[in-house]
Length: 389
Image (tube, helix red, strand yellow):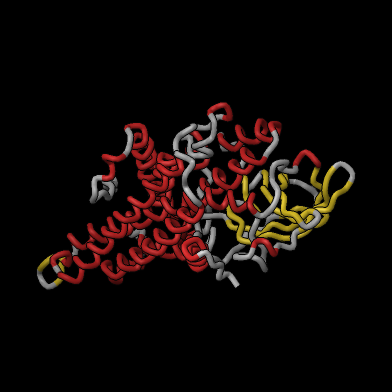
């Protein structure tokens, strides 16, 4: 398999530091050598390649922006974004695993947790010896997380947790779940450990998308959660939404990786596929598609790079993250579909990555805030008028 050369029409590499380029190239090589050779097999089987977790941990892919004292890489947000871009070039499910571990498990423990919680969990999660998941979405409450019905009730020495969560990446695999529940009407985060009595995490099956990823339900039936497992600095819906901003940031970068994989496959195919005695890349309609793809990839790269720089200056707004997630996933899906058209009937075969990315991106467009919800988030920001209901 030929090594991926990258897609960089505007020389954005000139805007990256040597360290950022080194991080990207390291993860790019990991994806080429370790993800791409096995991903189609796992996609067919509907399984996650667990053997990659240790390698990902050794590369510093988990909690990459968190302090070194927890075993983390302490990188900037642009380097983290480039990691996510390359992982999703491999597969959305691989990037999702790293995103959940980093942005939705390690970030809330670091941000809202006690010193004891941080010292205990973060090194385990960074090293991949523990896996985490994030429980916010419920069967009846997706876009409206504030309507959640999962409840925690105060008891001697802790809390009694009842309710259910759905569409939880890594749920069945997880050693710890960061679960959001209402306690006296206010939302708090709780660390629910694997093996807690009354806690189960059945895997959801029958997916046509994100097949190389574990998606689960979380069920809580009179689960006793010790006092020490409450995230003490969490309070209100703002806390889980802060976590979602971290995850959405990674997704905005990741979508570029999926788009690059599809564009690259379409470009190489178009140059080698001969019809009417010449390569299909010589036809105007094919060139128009390829030009549209590289244009949208370039715009997405510039969006994410500026967003990452703002994030590193603590100036990024959640609405700006929404814009990048909304735009980049929308166009990545559009690019995947165009690539399938260029590949013709071959586009549906798993000899090429295009149909797998297209199916995955259907989920990525929905999760961590649907396209429509991000539209309304940005709409409220620019007009001052909330149009959610």
